[in-house]
Amino acid sequence: MTCKPGPPSRRAVLLGATGTLVGVAACSGGSSHTAPSPSGTARSASASAASVTASPSASQSAALPRTTPWRPTSAEVTPAAKLRAVQVVEAIGAWPAGKGGAAAARARVAALRLPTGLVDEAGPLLPDEDAAVLQVVDAQYGGILTDSASVLVVCRQWTRRGGRVSAGGTTVDVRLTRAASGWTVTALHPARPGAAVPALPARARAVLSDSRIELPPAAQADLHSGRIHDSVLAAMLRLAGTYRMYISVVRSGHPLDVFGTSRPSDHPLGRAFDVWQIDGHAVVDPATPRTLIERFMRDAAAAGSYNVGGPVLLSGGGTANQFFSDNTHHDHVHIGFDH
Image (tube, rainbow, N blue to C red; front, side, top):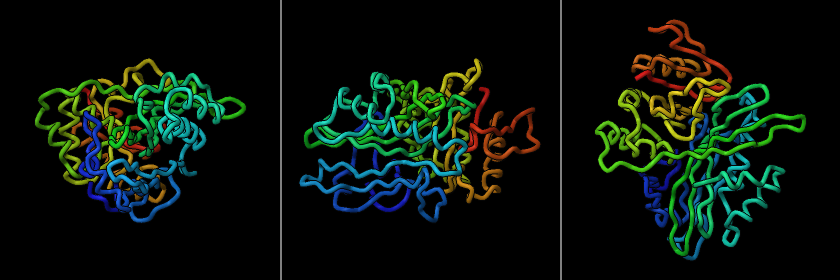
């Protein structure tokens, strides 16, 4: 891993289908790697200001990174919903040596006053390992209504078994409802990308090797599965010619239907991707230039998307309703394709 400040890179930590961490020892001497800053120039206590640094260890090969909690800012539509979703993922997906397993995870969830049965839905978030740390990359809405929400918690996870540290991660669709006492978690739906194919299409290989396209673990696995439409891959590459973008969700880890409806979402079909950060600027950050987001959305449409959503409602478009905006897309840009 190239341990330097800045967004965690696929070249820094290889998070492929095997989940094997390459380069931990190179980082365990005290260098740090920092999650993307929402402003691109200054760190803040915002959603994307989490940091990951190497923790001291007698054995460099067994050192787990030191992570920080992800916390929303007041810029979010409903910060309390995102906080609750992230808290349960952080509680289940990280534990010190000797505190692994479902029973210990239930105790951590109970301490949050959340249903302990959620642990049974954790899937890849709770592997059978000696110890684990987890870093939330971003939390974005899969949908937000008055009294219910879907929050997609995108995370990286490092686990240790004996003297070996491995890296992986997932995206969890956390479902919540709001009651008089506040938001509570009702279900967890971790990403299930499927097995990697032996031979990837050329465009998928190009996306995975493009340094201007940052992909979290579940999104990488989506590409390795070979189930992403060529139109999506072509648009990613075209946008990467102008922008450096951090993708949050591609296919897996997203609700099957458009939240609150019975209409199938383009994401599970491999025909959409979401971007939460553009040129180092988080979409949700009020300091991010609106002109940057507007230009990115229009360029996404020019790249072939029939359905571009974001925090800005744009006029025009080559097709009816090509651009849209709502509370769900306050924190990311959605780029969908009809073929």
